[in-house]
Length: 137
Length: 270
Image 1 (cartoon, rainbow over the protein chains, first blue to last red):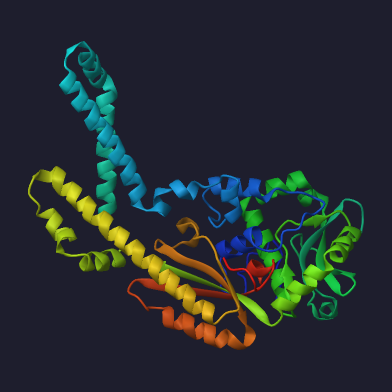
Image 2 (cartoon, helix red, strand yellow):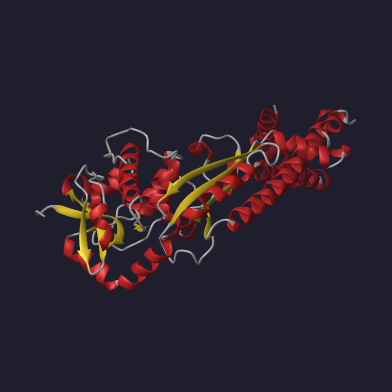
């Protein structure tokens, strides 16, 4: 078996891809507190930010790195849909309240909607719908 | 070793196996050597301060190319040792100031190392990943979940585009949830079958799709510690799982050094 240096890019002898290797050498293997301390979690944090390296970090979650929990790609669409539903329900509730109340407060609220908040909400909904439609296709 | 060097630790092996180690180059291109204490040997390399002083190392590890090279080199040294006999693989970037500190480690944890090495002898780690094609199971699942949720029903629903859209979304969501349930079920069943032909197992977290290069969902990512004389049976089970369900793809990697079983090997399950 040949052993290659870090500058040698020839593929490993087994069918191991980089993700599999990183998963094991960064997240598995025996942890020993050496003399020279390098906090691998810091490094993992950065590489996670770059969205390049492993999501397989049991330890990362313990220190609060848990982006995959909210990543729509990894979580599935359900999460985004729930947020979208909540926004729409809030919007409907606000509109109904404004219509039922009438009077000054509702007018003020109405002006708020007109002055941009409403259009923004609509725009967000539209974009969400587009995203949904795009994903379906 | 000279001043300005650190000792990078790759793995711990039995002392009597160190003569069989092939000559190898490590993460810094250095010659890999061993440090012996009692009946244990540490597989190490002397690495220079330029790239491996704590601050510079931290920066280097954040450079994906450097990290990739170091990870491959580290793994290659550990794998070369594993080809000779049982090894305890050590996590990347474990370093000591000098050989004596390594000897101190081997002496202090001799019983642990011996016990782990014994439990790993004659066994290797195999990785199994299962992917589910995100298109196929959705169709299959919606076919099972009844006509009301089929796409056709949603599209022909009265009430304008708004409610048609909502119905379609609801159908998609239901199909997806059903597919996720099947996927979880299948993953559990695959894991159970693989556990029966292995000594120990660990469930790993699903990998980022961007990294794995698959658009399919990773429904199972697990490591199994397999006896040498059961490898063929293990492989056969994996073969059976390929195509066991529509849209299911199974990938086997290995043999790996027992990275996932370096701690209390053979007893704990993920």
